[in-house]
Image (cartoon, rainbow over all chains, first blue to last red; front, side, top):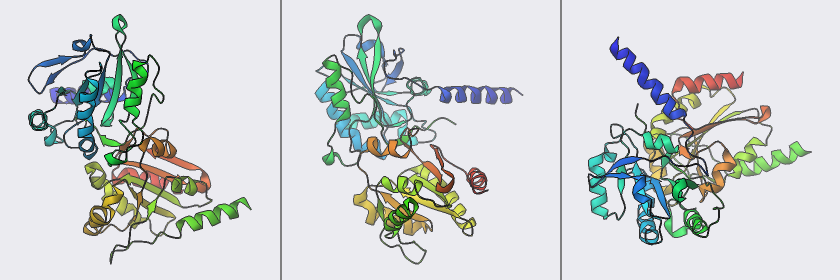
Length: 201
Length: 166
């Protein structure tokens, strides 16, 4: 009986979680705290002195995430000093994809020498909070001081996922530039192909 | 007259699409995103089940047998499964072709050769968040254009197919 109740509640919560739409452009972002690969907890409030944050839902295993990995690393190198550091979030369920376990995140981060945090969204709450659906999925946050962080751009990094030598349009970088100039990114939302986030079952 | 023009355009469009069979894999035809709107604008009474997938996408590969089964079980009905791959065009002759041969796929396989997802995704469906697998049920003569961003089991596919052809 107890198992049935727990199973029922879990499915209700799971459905409720999945039913959440996530953030739209202009929404204020609730704080979140997740464990980083260095064992420490990372919070959105850690970035209160930055101009913004480049939040990227990504993982180890998805071919699109892998194709973007070096570009994500370069984004942090290029934009951290300009006030927009990268925060990479892995929300995949390691039971479904062992390659995306916390241990494997540590290995990956170390072997590629990530300059940015790679945090583990174990309960998948943050993915639901944002409405992230796949990897990679980018949310550019703008710091509005006492008003908090707001979502200013959602979607793709550029227009050529698999062939990085064929990139013509750098959607995310254009968005960052717009935000730095006090403008609204245009487009503010772009579509990106990716692997579905592996939800807990 | 319009119907005639549309028919000719579609015939022209589809003339380079050889059927694939189990005895050998011919070169995989490449399409642009306009293929889908062309199909949609035709008068065809066929139910097209367009599955968007890729060889590297585990959930996509897992559901392929269900689509193959539909293709097989409904071959005497006006139902056509088309597997539209989003694999890299550069790897078409190696990875994609190899996969088709190894798995002996019988359904038509086309490669969508479009670079920018921000361009082609909204042209297929405004509801598409960009993840795969995704499936489009298209019956042009009845203006049926149902896009689903999800994995399917056989029972679900069968139910939807039956619903749409009756």
